[in-house]
Image 1: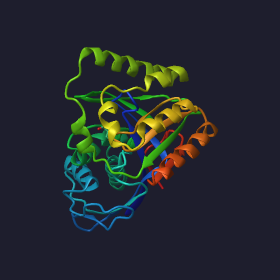
Image 2 (image 1 turned 90 degrees about the vertical axis):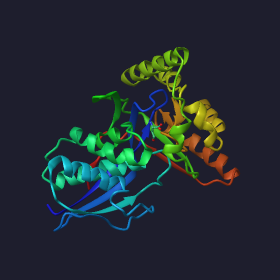
Image 3 (image 1 turned 180 degrees about the vertical axis):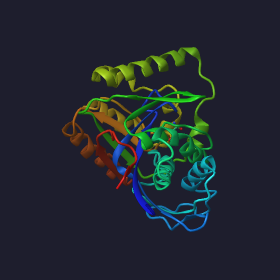
Image 4 (image 1 turned 60 degrees about the vertical axis):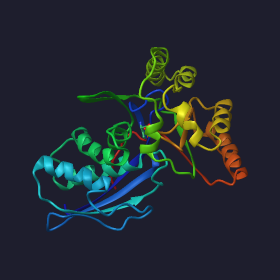
Length: 306
Ligand code: HSE
């Protein structure tokens, strides 16, 4: 195989209480990456579609991740890399993670799959670290592996997958303002008092149980965050109003997606989400701010060849 095209989905990180720990993949939004083997050992970023991405291979998350994979294999294989973004970087949907995950997934396939998808995680994380200034796996893991992923430990890196109710639907609400992950990370407190921490881990446990048992009342209460939401919500126009409306009209969970400005709302069906979508559009129309809405299932697959 000389060339391959893959889809790497966008993802929702944190999911309320799971800062840097929980994340799930979504459908429709993501990156389409095309990798082609070169005769030489260069990694070349072709002009991207949908966003202006760095073309220096040392500054692009996709090529940094591929380089980590090649170094581990002691391979000199070069690639042309084309990235088409189906959503905006800086939207809180794991843009850099999609690029990094898709890049290593595609390169591994072109190299006859020396690694399992799980083993690719550490290489994708090196790309992600370039964008956010530190290693966090809560976008890369679901984008690469699909479903709802939880990081049990960073050292050593260990993950597990949380089953989710089949009927669950995710509404993404993206008001068109940019929030940089590296800056949003700087707002998060470095320390947490036990009083707050015990609420947080209570909710982490409750959310896992609610996903297993489809206990929607518990899910709604568990999707609460004492760490990032209190300091980040002011970066998101109309956050309080949109959250209140969604929770009053059928949402079984609402919070910031990753570092924002995107928000996610969970619903028990697509029908339940429809009324909320219309009202949210009106809120942003009144404020004269473009908003993008995406309704989908939790993407069970992660990266795939297309
Ligand atoms: N867990 C990360 C954060 C996700 O909240 O900073 C960034 O998308």
